[in-house]
Amino acid sequence: MLAEAGWSRAQIRDGLARFANVDFAVPVPKPRPELSARDVFMYLLMFAALYLSAYQLGNLAFQLINLAFPDQLSPFANVVAGQKIRWATATLIVAFPVFLFVASRIARDIAEEPARRNSAVRRWLTYLTLFVAATVLIGDTIALIFNLLNGELTVRFVLKAVVVALIAGSGFGYYLWSSKADDEALAR
Image (cartoon, rainbow, N blue to C red; front, top):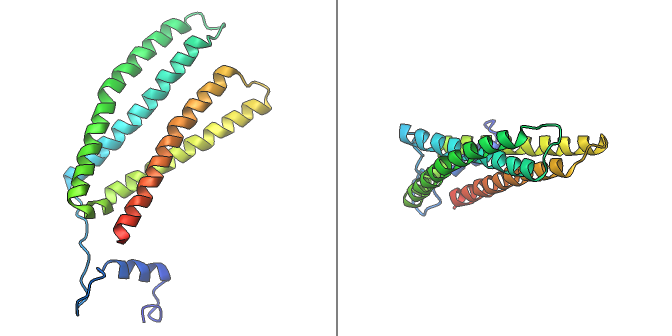
């Protein structure tokens, strides 16, 4: 009947998914997630701490690579690397525990109230993270191929490309898995 009324398949699927599959004479709607200022704060803080931690982890790895494979044309590289290592370490000491703490609080809230998996902020920021990680992986691959074709593929560059791929790839893989797990849990 909905299709005859002009609803698309996606709209029908979405509309019917809003009702619980229970044995009752009247259709029972599923609980709708609420968007609270607390949720927005927690998710923004978690993802900001994640982005900051990922960036500074990459920065730290880059500086260690710079020390292991120094650029002979840059005489002050070791001084600059030392400063960047201290900054990245300080940032990771603060940001990564914040990420872990907030992520564990969110996980606990979801365990207590599974409907929170459907938070609009959670979904938007998860897909934004997937987008950022995918574009970083694409850019990293383009840079790697460009330098290969240009004949400028050095050990230092390859190691840095691997670092970027590992950090972005692990974030992409985790949040893709998390998104699928949310979808499966919400379908039950």
